[in-house]
Amino acid sequence: MSTALIFGGSGKVARHLTTKLVASSYTVHSIIRKESQIPELEALGAQPIVQSIEDSNVNDLTATIRKHSPSVVIWSAGAGGGSPARTKAVDHEGAVKVFDAAAAAGVKRFIIVSAVDIRDRENKPTPEWYNDDDTAVSNRMWNAIGVYCEAKLAADRDLVTQNGRRKLDYTIVRPGSLNTDEGSGKVAAGKVHLDKSISREDVAEVIVRCINTPSTIGLAFDVVGGDSPIAHAVDEIGGQRVDTFEGRY
Image 1: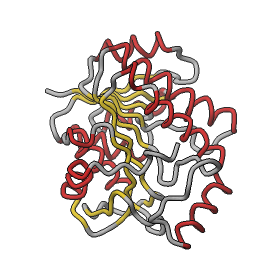
Image 2: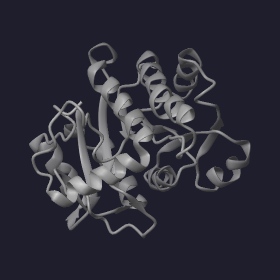
Image 3: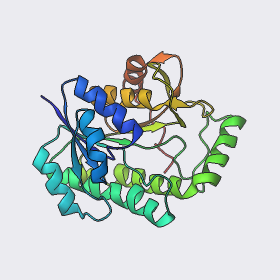
Image 4: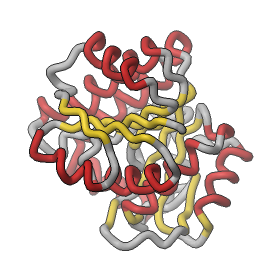
């Protein structure tokens, strides 16, 4: 039986992911922040672990990962739009600690949930497939949640640029704005436009497909609502080696 360890297990994407992985006979260990979240996670079939990402150091996190020997670690944690200091502590510094901990614990497969349009807007060109509407969406997003975007950029950049020493088999999944709709099982992935949202359930299904698609290792790709079946979309990303973060960090 395969084992997954999810950081940020109480989040809505992570809950959908837990349900899907449990249904696929995974043992799911779920890192959460509060004891009050335990019953809901247990009801989904997860084995909750209460541990503060902020208060834990790399050794603490390594010990947790090593104890449960997961075949895959998924980072789906976030400060949830809290204070700038906490956003940096979780979305950037917390993620980096977990990258180091996963590597130290000997885990290879690593999936991180990021977001569309995470890029160095000051020093790198706008993606060539963006149209005027995409640029407008980008401007609104960075004006509204710029601190979060900067933290995600710093974390994703660290994951990619420091992987020579960590040697993680990572995939960066970059969903567009999230909605609460029931999953459709269909998406648009790769060099997409930013005007469509995506259901959290579909994001979870994309993650599951990535875990089982080795050709996505080393890639970062955008995903929004669309018309392509998820399995086909992810297979195409891997087959064509589409990377929407490359050259933009």
